[in-house]
Image 1 (cartoon, rainbow, N blue to C red):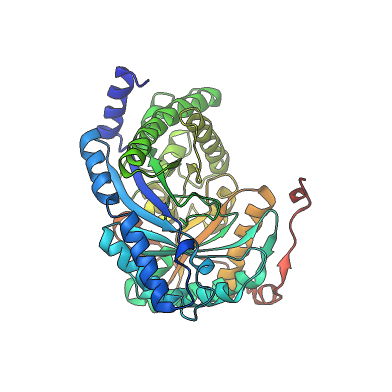
Image 2: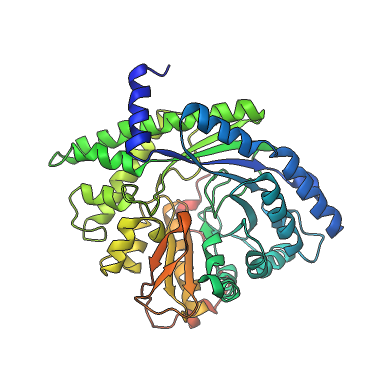
Length: 450
């Protein structure tokens, strides 16, 4: 039962504190589309998506209007494409079909041009990974992801090396847009199957034929709530965040259930992730600074982020029986005005961001690095982040943009929700010898849980 006071409080959050439903994402299985004929496969993929999602945007806009809740994006995620392209030679043709379907349905993004290679690489996986630079440079709405490690399997270092090269190639092929293709490409360890957020969304093989997943975001709401807690002990800070996260998740639950009913599609999960935007007042960094840090990135930042992430999850779980996805705090540098300012001051370094990923929801996200950064260095960054995820049994990811022609201190503009980012330095020492060993880093001992 939602009370009158909760409704009024929610309206205040929407009107003045930038609470929004960041995305309604429809997950669609493409397993029924499999064919050894490229043209037939592309037609089946296009038809399946456009039939299933034909009303997604219309329903999202209707809910937004009737409930007064901003729904920023409407998105689609599909079965990891490498799983349906084993019998064809050119997976990039499927990328075009996906992009065409996204345009037809009117969604903002479509995710799932993906491969899961945490224990080994099939021929289909290899073809898809090698096609990513072409696919992302020739499409508008498509997002791509590759899972290179897991706590149970270890880290596939051959895949890590490939992704270093793929990121460099993708940046080069989208150089006229400051390497924008890399902003639509993420490399995971322990990827989840019900993530509604791009660029990492895909519809997992353990999912139903179709599902509605909703991602809610409200950094501004949490920031305002903590303004009344200045000087109070951390126990009370955590309780305040939990209560606030509860209210935010209730909004997501309401929207998810209504979208599920109107679209006649099963409700999947609510992902409560404090995903920032470049707008002032919508920053995760500002929450951390409200806890008493002069600047995000100062000593104490990791501890503050750990408290925030944990409290958000605890509050969200009480508000919905199906909280999932990534749920917690995101730290995408280019999308958070506080992170941008901290990076411009030199306080927020790549090393500090890496430490913060040990306790946040995802990982190194939307970080611009010099365009001449070697592929092996990018691969080493991926390996470090994957190791954090593997050992800690959590999802970690890397979305870096080696913006062509840029150097440390330059600024890269992406626009919209992707914002802008200062180009931050990477260590110049080579990791080539490490990366070219290949093979697989074994899973940690605590992965043997059975």
